[in-house]
Image 1 (tube, rainbow, N blue to C red):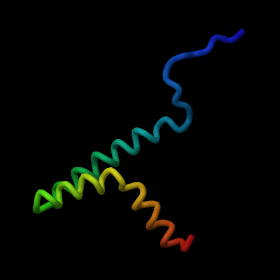
Image 2 (image 1 turned 90 degrees about the horizontal axis):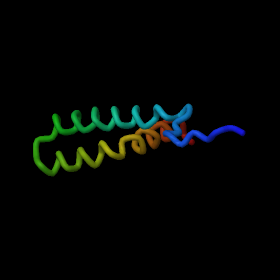
Image 3 (image 1 turned 90 degrees about the vertical axis):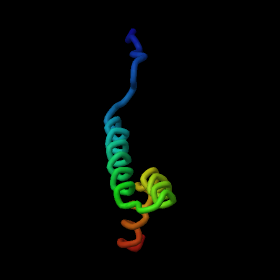
Image 4 (image 1 turned 180 degrees about the vertical axis):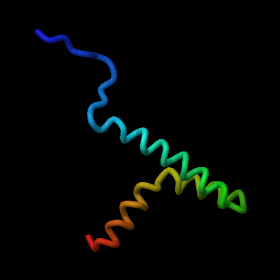
Length: 65
């Protein structure tokens, strides 16, 4: 009878969260450095949160999928 391990269950895809987190931090820094107004800074934070969606959309657009 095998014991179940009740700790963190990451697996092979567990590094995806780290990659997204680093990308989020980098995108926030990039957008905030280039913002000249407060509203551009807020928009930059929103863009930083959703950057993977923009990235995938552009790739599909280029590949005509």
